[in-house]
Amino acid sequence: MSDFRVGFIGTGRRKERADTTGFFMAYTHADGYRGAGGCELVACCDIVQENAQGFAAYYGIDKVYLDYREMLAKEQLDVVSICTWPHLHEPMVTDCCAAGVRAVHCEKPMADTWGGAQRMARAAVEASTQLTFNHQLRYGWHSDAALQAITDGAIGQVLRFDACRGVLLDVGTHVLDQINMINGDQRAKWVLAQIDYRDENLYFGAHCENQHILFLEYANGAHGLLMTTPDGRNPVGALIRRHDETEWTVPTAPEGGSLAPMDRCLGDVMDCVRTGRKCRVDASNALLATEIIFATFESSRRRGRVDLPLDVTDNALRSMVDSGALTPRRKAS
Ligand SMILES: NC(=O)c1ccc[n+]([C@@H]2O[C@H](COP(=O)([O-])OP(=O)(O)OC[C@H]3O[C@@H](n4cnc5c(N)ncnc54)[C@H](O)[C@@H]3O)[C@@H](O)[C@H]2O)c1
Image (cartoon, rainbow, N blue to C red):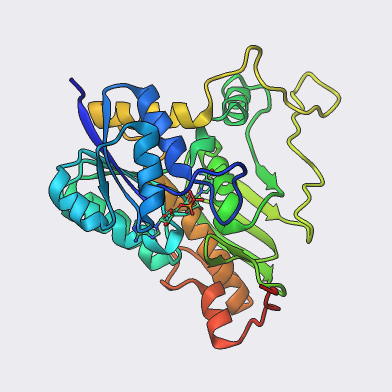
């Protein structure tokens, strides 16, 4: 007898190589629920019938839907995974909350606007739905190593975080979220930033900058400096130098490997549903990284520092494209 009835919105299509037009993340979520135990995969939904049927056949799921609202109305789901593209996350989360779903695990980034991210988090609080986001790198060995080094006193008090990796609404949300975790999930006080957007760059349907540089201060006085190169190269990589060492070294994965971050993440999410404990990937933590992302776009629009809380609710990058203030060269189709 399973404890939880689990459903999926947006199954994706399993293919040989994942890319920015489809990572079929629902499969990774499903594997995670299986590993967590106590979960019965009962229903799935996709607007593309063959995607939903392929997923159902792969996991032995009986109930297949083309309309997620119908699935929510009929299946009395305890847990729902949302694995669609970012512009759909807010309405889907909000509908799950209204349907009385106990826990929603939604893919990152939270939403494609700051207002949307805030609304979905509020809807979950009001409905007492556990809302988590798939910032699974919080459960990776890099995060463990950084936290351990701080706990052990091996690197002293962290004064500044430097990172150089990925566009903000895609990999960047993971990077910021990891930094936030290592910094004790402190709120940012201000963001001063610039983006460059000259060539159209869509990730899962959302406009993303070609390059960014952003400097921020956290409530505890720590600073963050994030940047990307035009070619997306990371010129530094992850490096560590402890008090008793003279050289910087590249941290290495633990001996014998560790449980994959996704499995640990879903295991923790389900444990939090059982115990009521606040999850590491809780919406309140995801909001901290999301506010910095939209503040970065807003700082670029204002050409100045943005003091938080952020007082605009749109996505300034997208608004600047819509208004013609930014005119990225369209990609040949
Ligand atoms: N956590 C990570 O490391 C990670 C990695 C890759 C992608 N992602 C994120 O996962 C999300 C999903 O990306 P993906 O690559 O898995 O997508 P995908 O394209 O593989 O799958 C999305 C599915 O949603 C379906 N869909 C669209 N509209 C729908 C609707 N109204 N109702 C039901 N289904 C609908 C599509 O038909 C498609 O099958 C994105 O937000 C992306 O940023 C996260």
